Figure 1 (tube, one colour):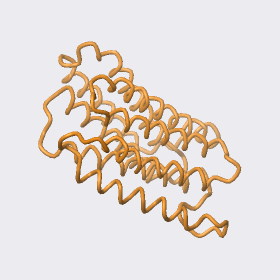
Figure 2: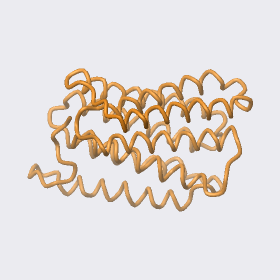
Figure 3: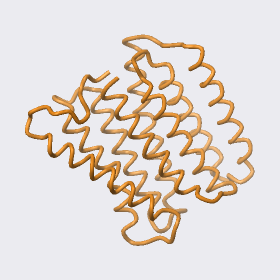
Length: 230
């Protein structure tokens, strides 16, 4: 995909800034992980926005000339940052649909990246990846069926969202390039979304908020690394 090193020295005067953004993203992610699941606090939306927001800037300054895949990756991460903020606002029920919409658009941006790559280089239909895809589809439908009674008026939005993320995961699994990071990132992202659904519409379990954030952040990071280095 993009032959751009993620953090390697490039001699363009921005190496220090790149490393600084990476450290900022990692540190604030760990800080937010330690605070998630507790009482809401005024700085929560801002703190939650920094980890992925820093990755937006990291990608933006690492793509010379703004090629299409780089622009789409920036869009995916920026939309995800918006979703993070919406889901961290105090009146979460009011803003949930906006967060869902932001992440839906982020998944569509990732799908556009995968579609471009597949359109230019074809599919990688390995048996193991196809089995993983079938399992993901089955789990998604099973989760939706188990939560349907508690979705209420959110049935259609959640159904659309789950369908889109399944397509995103499918695209990640059949990419032709060396895409272990992309596939892992997509699966982690889907797992994070599944736990959000369980937490909001089902029966949350101990530590779910920490698992949601850890899988989400790692998923986004691996997607970014895979797309930049694939």
